Image 1 (cartoon, rainbow, N blue to C red):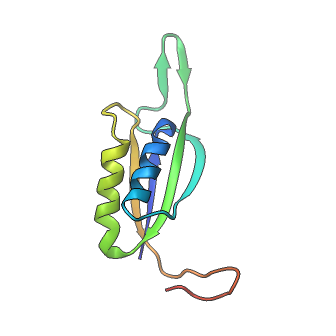
Image 2: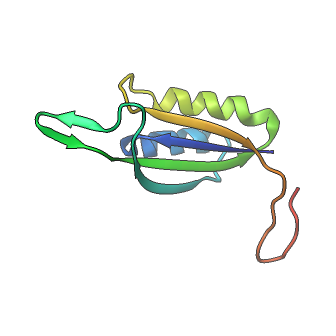
Length: 105
């Protein structure tokens, strides 16, 4: 199993989440965050915004589904502008359900 973390623009939240749900991936954790990437913020006139609002989507998927999920997020979160985001994929070693204490993997 793999953890897919996608940092996206907040305005793309609904589009990406609905696309994931429609493709059979309804389980997602969302967190609103602030950060900056390589561009080190945003300059608008004389005002510099050091940190910008972003949304982190986290989901655990089977290894066979990783590429499908990544491609779906890439397609639906894309605007073509700086700050579209990043996707990180990490291995999951263990998972437990808190209510039951049962190990899931």
